[in-house]
Image (tube, rainbow, N blue to C red; front, side, top):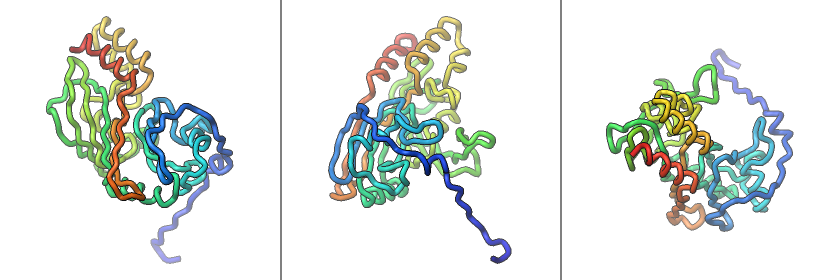
Length: 269
């Protein structure tokens, strides 16, 4: 060893190492499947992979039930998982069945060649109909589950396009170029337009308290009935890892999301 040598130590996650993955039957909407990939429409509320406090009932448990072969690049607790969506976020996901496909797809995500489109309902007025949010993101000191815009963070870029501006809310499309954790949620919160019903980033019940009692009750009821943040991964486009042809998949807005927009439009239009 020499002075100023950097020593890296990995402490194994004993809980994950000892976790016995179960194959569990669940309703999965499969858009596409071949020998190398699977594309699904992940419902809101479904956690992607097992972890502390979530040993089963995840997407991985469902994938193990339906598919005999899944990639092992991300370890034994995340078979097939190339990328992820937050538990409350619905929408399109691609899963790798082979290690070769996994590496190819992971490289496309890393090289920012995968095109993504999200639809969200956000609070407030957007001053511009379209633009790009380029703000670095880092974990919040004292709470590693939350990310914030910080100058020393990792680069993050999100293009946005206003679909419809209501009185208090807006429907917005987002096209993230990078794939940082919670990126869209962090960027919208920084803009002062947090995602509707996003408790973690300032778009939850506390946001409704700033309105007159009638509107407060209206928005509070809408959030409790919706029971998640209003973010949906609508489109995913990439190069197929075997055919090398461009492919894209679209997950239409879930009915609960459509109902929410129609409900809020009554008071906000």
